[in-house]
Image 1 (cartoon, helix red, strand yellow):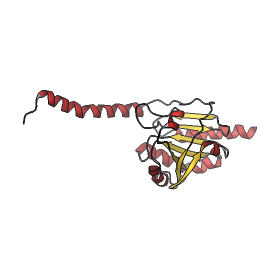
Image 2 (tube, helix red, strand yellow):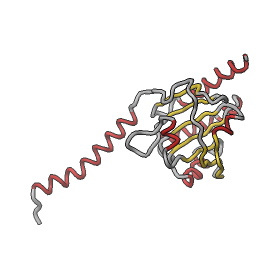
Image 3 (cartoon, rainbow, N blue to C red):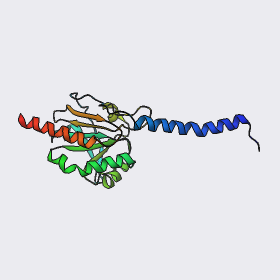
Image 4 (cartoon, one colour):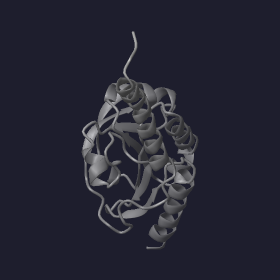
Length: 195
């Protein structure tokens, strides 16, 4: 059966258009320059949500975590993707340093908690918690939700125990998030120790 040129054109367009949109999304999210989402010195929005540590679910509350010291809050696009797996491994490897600085680390994505139960064991190596922001409300409050898609941007914050943001860094490449948050914590510890 012969197809009309009109039908062939729409069939090709139906295949090409999604591919072009996918490439545009990758380009927009992969090559964004480093920028801070919420400014340093601003008050961190409080939140509570379901989290998982070592596959065990619990209720995470930022206010409670801040009673124990600074919090490293990092947003990532999706569990089990290449960049997010690298970042989770890097945070897991650095957990002794974070603990020595008195910090709690929590990763947040828009994944369902059931996915994060697995991710917290395999990729986070049961060293730190990951939390579910299925509705995107937390990412939106932290100006870390990507426009038009259901993902958070890769953004890291260090929040002081008084609730103020000490450090904010946003870049889609995982490199720089661990070194930046550790440096901010060391600076905070020096200043806090001097008071």
